[in-house]
Image (cartoon, rainbow, N blue to C red; front, side, top):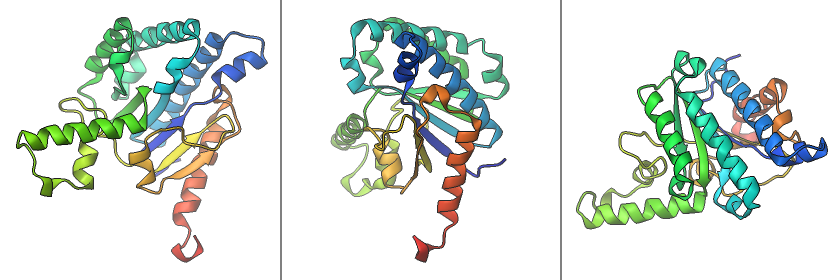
Length: 243
């Protein structure tokens, strides 16, 4: 199945609820969530999707219980470290990138991210973009600040500021890193019908199709993923006068 999609973004909601319903710890739910992310990444590659962006930790999530946060940080560190030797990542030439205020993360997580990004920086076949310590309002504000700085330095003029230029200042705001393309399909699991401060610039301005799934993220599977893609295709193929 070729999806004809370039960029799919996912709000991975429901890890904790999944765990609690089964009498497990939140950490177990997050572990199950990571396993689901790996399965969906593989499916996305098979379907010809170039960019998969997943919402792993928002800036608002820093208000969670400190013990749970430390467990999450340990899980992130572990997973990023193993990317360097992950055969599937290298075989499929997947470029791993993290977007967000990574300076808010513990140093050990930042170092693990650096290793993962460095080991895949030459790939451009597929992109796994992981939103960590991310908030869309912050992303837009940071872009505005950097545009102002470059305008003051004479690197750009006011007349050059348009939508395309602003997009270039969005995350990942690192040298030689192309910006995220417009989101075509956004998926949210867990039953809630909101986008939770996620990729507003890349999705809202593009009239992205949004698929809300009642499945908790660890329950999200190939069948549900294909349902989301079919909804996208149905919506995009609908005649303009029927919208």
